[in-house]
Amino acid sequence: MGDKFDSFVVFAEMRTGSNFLEANLNAFAGIACHGEAFNPFFMGYPKSEPILGIDQATRDENPKKLLAAIRGQQDALGGFRYFHDHDPRVFETILKDHRCAKIVLTRNPVDSYVSWKIAQATGQWKLTDMKAQKVAQAVFDADEFSTHLDALQRFQITLLNRLQTSGQTAFYVAYEDLQSVEVMNGLARYLGVDEQLEALDKNLKKQNPSPISAKVSNYDEMLVALARLDRFDLTRTPNFEPRRGPNVPSYVAAATIGLIYLPIKSGPQDQVLDWLAALDGVPREALRDKMSQKELRQWKRKTPGHRGFTVLRHPARRAHDAFCRHILTTGEGSYRQLRNTLMRRYKMPLPKDGPDAGYDRDAHRTAFVAFLKFLKGNLAGQTSIRVDAAWCSQAQAIAGFGEFCLPDRIIREEDLASELPALAAGQGHVTTPAVPAAAEPGPFTLADIYDDEVEALTADAYQKDYMTFGFTRWR
Image 1: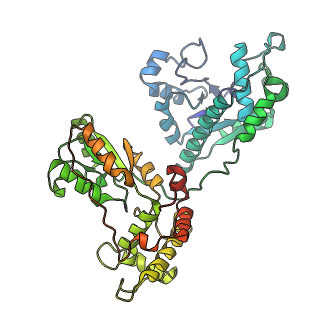
Image 2: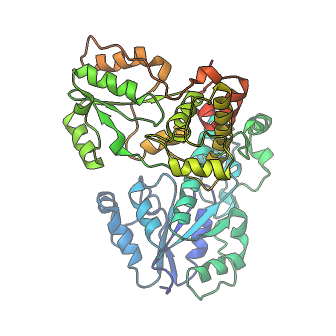
Image 3: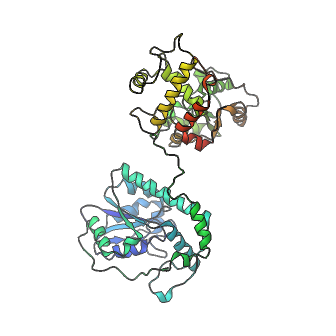
């Protein structure tokens, strides 16, 4: 075993050349790769023997026993191949182990997909002599390939993020690199093994050396399907917002029934909380809030059939609410220090001591437009000012909920009058109180100043919310 690492993992996928890579790794006396050690359907290789004395039943019961055996191997540096659909119980353990070397093997996903389809058709997954080669053409299925590609990309993004956040680097190998003895020797040096190969293992042969046009029966159809794929993800909505946590203490549970509200700041919280309290005929103080994650778990266990919900608000109305409550005013709820910074550094035309008798509708519209322009840069990570929960994108807020628990239902503010009674009916309430009207903060309402420019600036700042939730013009 080398001094750098106690073990290694090859992150790969089917038909990426991982068998060939493993054969060459095992050509080094100081390296022992144990195949797909955590494949849920077999162990190491189909119909293979136990690995280092650990059989499949033992591994399935406790996969960490096999991990420990591979790490503890004394005669060579032990490792294995891991695909995106292998036992997820060991994934985080592997990634957190800085003494486990990471090797990432990649291949053009179209090539690997076509190779996989041919192997499925022929039943031949390895080739050691061309005399035994079985020949078939793949049929390209656009939907199947899209699903295949999405799974690979999501796994690679997760893998990259975990390595970045834990301060680790991986040794990347492309399919085309596998024919280079120099790359294999460099990989051995990365693993801390001084031995070098003179030539590559030649037992395994390339199964399908023909050009891809000859390997796919519906090649023209494949080209059309691939042309529709956005290879460079040009249609994505860029997202530079910081990730948000679940903020469990902000959740509010009903007094007696199994409803829990996951509020998004600058939404209709007062409206929803007043309705929740009236539902059980109690004051708002009787609602359950400020729970820890442990307390929320206990509440869920004690409340079978519970339902969680959140409420979306149109981004223009939500931005105006945040502006009026936290930026325009100097009173309760004001972000005074931030307000001063916006006036000084970003020249936001705010009344020095808050709205006064001379603050008219035109001044309000001018100040709000300036705030929307600031929001665009702030949400794009172009300012030094935090992205506050009062104006973060609603898509990001809901993603944060998902770190602990997602709401069962996402309701739009304009649908509260029908959606909230439906939720209550599911908890046994036949008659329910009316949903109160929402009060707007500020000296002027959004309707007083809303126009095409306000809508365009809002849509520009909140591209992600408009794309994710299908928002259109407010009025």
